[in-house]
Image (cartoon, rainbow, N blue to C red; front, side):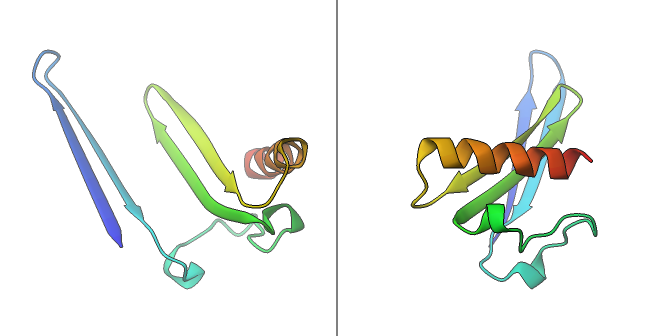
Length: 84
């Protein structure tokens, strides 16, 4: 599924546009060469989102069947991987 979101703020005369691809088929999504999507830290990952704008950015990782401590450890490892 492809998504497109357009927000128009008439007060500030600004427009925000977002788009995405949602799929279980990783061949439909391009990942930078340095990102190993088969990393052990992503074993129980069900969702990865990355967003950015002039105001900031985010990395969203959702884990399934993972306790809080493990999820935090895996997320920190992925953030270090994504930032390097």
